[in-house]
Length: 234
Image (cartoon, rainbow, N blue to C red; front, side, top):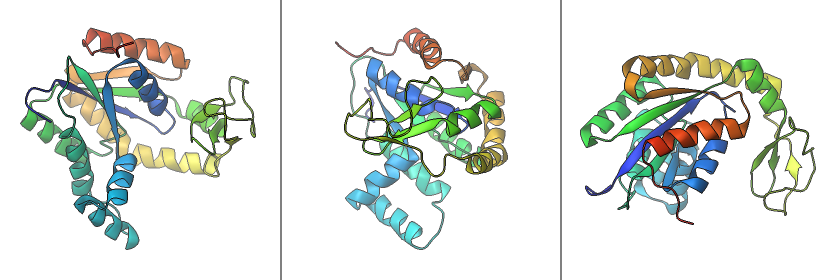
């Protein structure tokens, strides 16, 4: 990231299926910016056989977890290659940090670079998460997620997005798997969210995310406009 760039970092936090991914897609359709997720960064570096990608692949092949240091290096690499920009643009960070330790690393980096930032926490009750997961369908071609809760799509429908694939139910979208993921979230990530809320009081915004997608986006859009984020040019 160059010195004359104007990027504002927004870290999107929340339980699995809290709606972060959906909102990121809508935000980037409306505002100038880019996004980061650990999974996408891992795939990018492994596919291009970068130095980071080589380290990550060796760990995965050995059945080991990717360390916080490497995840932080992936984040830093993305953050420092945003390039120049006109106006104020977004850098949306999806689901990172996940632990208090990762947050402390991010906090030091933000202070070191004097980066303006906010944490957006998408708050949803567990029972609503369960309904979302068990009602979720995914296109087997473009991987766009859809929900059966509104009653406008059903399993095996053609994909409304790419028109090529069909909507399938992923094997991990079942109650047992979801409850296990929520338990992992409560153990590792929920304490971090409480920690961030206490230490980032001026930069922490909680969004009620059990509402309709449009209602959530309208609140997020208003927040970004008030932060003077550049809208996409028509």
